[in-house]
Image 1 (cartoon, rainbow, N blue to C red):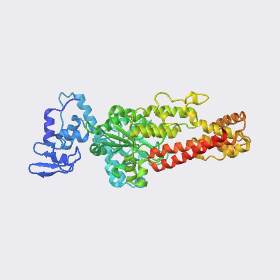
Image 2: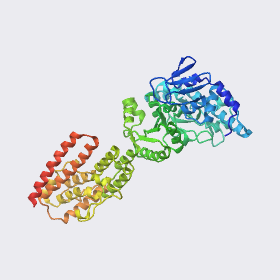
Image 3: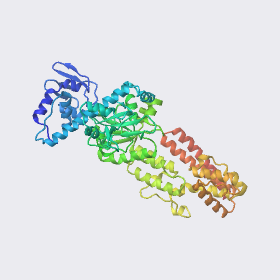
Image 4: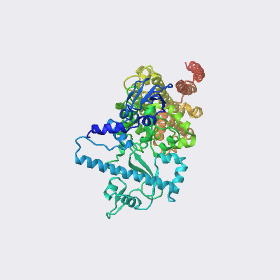
Length: 586
């Protein structure tokens, strides 16, 4: 890109009203020949920030930041120098000139400026149509039903496109725009017969602007059935690139530069709802995965003294979790502190704010977890607890992630306890380096993995009970549901109780895992002699002991010391009873 001429830079600098420019970021009051106020670059209670209106300079005696109008815009708007010059030139009405500019480059710039002007005109037309037309009444009621005020709709220039085929085309032609420009801006397209028609018809229009507020395209939500996809974006073109776009960046960036944080959501109405609720750093990725270009824009809120934070408030479903994990990999090279806001399943930020208020979202935001915690919890949530291999796989993945957390930290300790509790394995198994550990060979007849060890006692109880006639049937009914560590084993116990005489009868065809487990237990029971009652009692006590161990880990994780003490006492009673039963069998 050709550089601006020195004359251009001087004319822009001369045209800037420094007090007005800085006054948009902090309140200023005159003191002698200077203006003072609170510094926009660091937190302070006593004003130490000074503006020299004559020389058009600023300086903070508190943090040492200082410079001219161009640097002020670069710092507060996260722009490069060239972009800062362009922005100030637009504000001041100064025509810019570039050094050694070739005619083709100038022609491309002028064409870009015309397309930007056309898109700005379209945004104003759509916004007016939403406010004033009878056709848009349904759209207005829909937006009101989402709790969105006229103020926030106007701030984001939300509009509505007429259902007629050529309203945009006719208006643009009257303003002197050519068909080619309408197509290039993404506002019109040709049909199969070659005729031109409006791309957006009968839709709520969300202008997609760059960080300087220039409209590059539109996102459009349909209001009628059978009129194409629910959401329709501007097609990729010279101006609009979906992978670079962040809805609301032009409005959110101003606040984000102060707070050094962004809140990333998925949809347009999520941004509007959060902005309206006072969370002014919200932007949307519009249902796509976070891209490198988007993250680069978000990373601008951080600097050498204050690391930027990006909060992800994406859907809690599997696709949303995968999107957050991809974002984590991108953030590693950007120096961004990525945190995850825990959203209720099936609830988006707009729903949450509308139902429970802004405080509900702010409270969840205050509890946002670092990405490493989210990754571990995602592994544990997706773990197949019904099979030894599933538990072993989850243990291996969780241990690898936890190993990246610094040792002897509260975060690492909490994750270790959480993984041990979820997978029902000893804490040492989670902390051990290397592959998923196996139980010592001398402790068991055969080496067992952590997953096999976790399920062994429960499967052994089912087998012993099934092999022991009426006595076994009685004992099979005794354990509570929470004494089994997996839903599959609970379902197997219920099936065996209901079909004790013929375990293989009435197995559901749509539950192959249950069928496989019941079959294994039934075959193993056929080869076993009846089990003594004392051994059956010991089996139930072992189940209870493992349940208490799980509860103790959970109470420790939650910091519930009273509960820990209560459970420890229960555990001691179980150990005493186990000792008593073992004495009877000796």
